[in-house]
Amino acid sequence: MQLVIIPTYNEKENIANIIRAVFRQPIDFHVLIIDDGSPDGTASIVKSMMEEFPDRLFIVERKGKQGLGTAYICGFKWALEHKYDYIFEMDADFSHNPDDLCRLFDACANNGVDVAIGSRYVSGVNVVNWPIGRVIMSYFGSQYVRFVLGLPIKDTTAGFKCYRRNVLETIEFDKIHFKGYGFQIEMKFTAYKCGFNIKEVPIVFVNRELGTSKMSGGIFSEALLGVIRLKWQSLFRTYPQKKQNHE
Image (tube, rainbow, N blue to C red; front, side, top):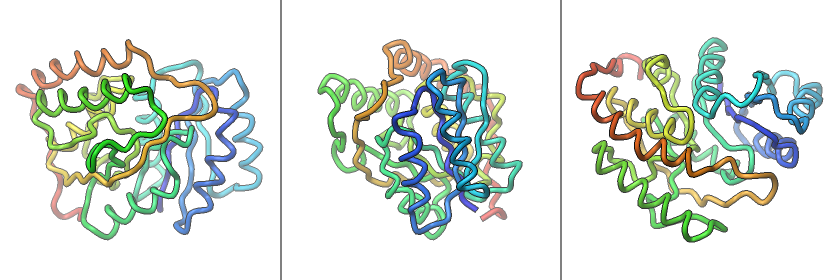
């Protein structure tokens, strides 16, 4: 079974359309919304749609903004409890094209990949409608992360991913500390240190048209400064390793 986890905060303009776009795919994806108390009624829209899709659409409601990282970890635990085999991360705002879900799934299900990353930078710079300053910050930020961590991934902050179940069973969630975009770096680095096979699948990232971006300078600073601490801590830590018999 395949589960797409979508964290939300004030996404009423996008949420119904993104859910329907996922359900239109030729693969039977389920969707789990993790909503952090959106005051705009995002959760109410989802709950009304659950009557239409009772066996495919689910929601976890949390009180207040608790951060991207904790939202995904909440979703990962839910996915493991409900026995999903492939677990996806995806944004609600159509910056990630739902049509690419099948390509990420194919990499993991049919090509022996443990973590498939929808990558903006694996084949050039594939970003649409971003200010040039943000493109430069993101691209060279990823270069910096690669250099500090020795991580062979070009899009280190990508948030469009597919995990095999055993990756999330292996990673120790209580040792994942970043809450913002640094969370994406920490998860990739941890999966890499655990010995999992990671592959970047080229995508085109399109900046949101509706709603408000959650990106901030503080979130980005957390990622850039935090990688130094992440590298330092990794020198004194033993990472659980991929179990070969779980292929």
